[in-house]
Image 1 (cartoon, rainbow, N blue to C red):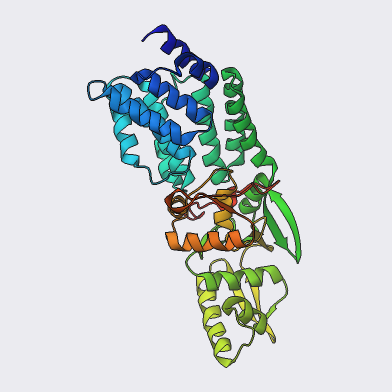
Image 2 (spheres, rainbow, N blue to C red):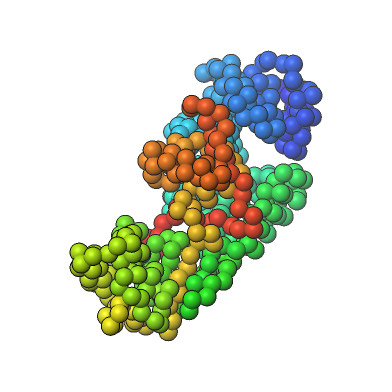
Length: 406
């Protein structure tokens, strides 16, 4: 490797893409193409970066498998940043295997870190934790340690383990400061701000107040019977009942919890659960059926008492009842939560992350665009969707994650 390539690589490691390009911008040999691609990615020109990295991988050829594998890892990182979740994950796994077999432990660990970040993004937390546990950070440079700790913090936030998240972010802050890369320090600060920002609303006795993530964690660990409208479950300190696949039952449970200790009139329950303004006898019959089903599902946590005008929830063990809701009520809240990261998303990537059909996601995006909450850039397959972040709010509770019972 010649001196210009070495100097360009050092400039990139120090977070100076312009310094790297000053040395190799006019060169077209494989190492220069790869470094130019990384530099362009740092500058935000992701399309050009992908072209350069693919050209470098082809130019290296089969005789230089390690260099080709490094190009694949760099392209995978660009795909993750650009939210191209359809990028073949098996290619990254194959590249990591090549790097491990040839003793390039640092880049192999970075490849595994990218796999973990993708799993975290689509809410597969158990797999992300197992993969992260296999990462050996012994030889990591400071920048890689900071990125590793950011992933640890992200998993802890999604698990609502705020103490672990705060400790990981402190380690990430130290590593980022040691690395001396301003963009990395800014990323750590942005993640830290999520712990200080409102994450959910507590609805109790007809009053509402905002909660931070640590307050949400404390609420879910308390004896309160919580109807969790962020994860569609009902829980107290001893048990969790998921209603994620039973929307009518969850709607009834939330209505009863919001009114506790008072009851809810039958007509109000019918209107909320069945979305009708003109209830008839068939709706009232159906309400009795659904209330019976809800009684059976929540038997271990609460009872449901019939009153003269409606129904009331009666907790079995908990001294009080509360509702944990999203900080902003929005029918397409999960879609907005992903778009609030400031990155541009395709509808196909959103469908993968949300676990929904692409057509459903497109309908949600069209609805949000009509309300001026998101905007589209480009046309056809190149179309991407963006939304400014919700100021002052963290979105972790809006993103898909395993239910607390899992």
